[in-house]
Length: 346
Image 1 (cartoon, rainbow, N blue to C red):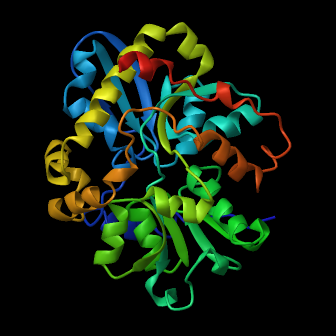
Image 2: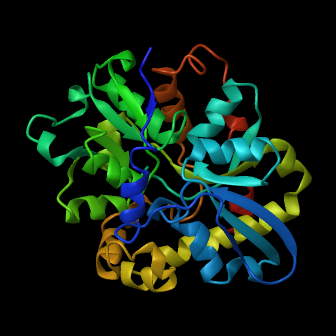
């Protein structure tokens, strides 16, 4: 069994000090879109991360209100915790990675993605600067402390998948839960981890500080295929199947807003997108660097919200390679996502 450790207590003081230096997520901070209409509560696994940008951007563009919805966004640094909040009935849906839907079905839960926002993970494995000369690929994972947001999160899934794909048994790696933003940076700074998986703008903050360098880059479809062997659709909005069936009108309105947002992203550059975002999202790295990062990884965003045809089967294969919860289980991929609402929005 892998050894799991949470490096939060030791990093807390440093993380607070770094708060002004990087855009961290504050758990459960709520952001409500103004206006009447039906309320939909969505918890996002790291609201200020660029991989989850469409959720806040839709609000800033007024698309929720235009759709007749009052969308309440809340923030949870780890996607697995957002998932648990939804299953407990505390929120309606989750902004998180699609892979959770397959994992949940294997555990007897019925959930489904209703709109696909990312066609690549946008994740980068960052190696600590003093380890960079000898840590050059996932083949070097053995015996290393690898930062993830939390146990059971998508960063946990992908880290294990990278290990297996590189021929490293998962019991030879040590995932360390360090969340994201300031706590991730603090873990690097205090050498609590040797490498770790994170996204923009944390990637840029780490490079600016000279703390870490990218070793595996999944900000492009080509990089993702090289790392994982296929298309790995990531960020989506998902609900329990029971919620989708009983709230179809609200789900359709929500998807309409996200399809408009994805089209808006395709028609604008990083600076124009950054202009729409809260200033706190780029305070740590600077607006120009935030916009530059957006331009460099703009290809991660889906142009239309449709699930890539080969995505679900690739993710099932990836999860089956290391997860005892998924391996050997009968998974009906058609029940883990639907394109119906996106097609109606188009």
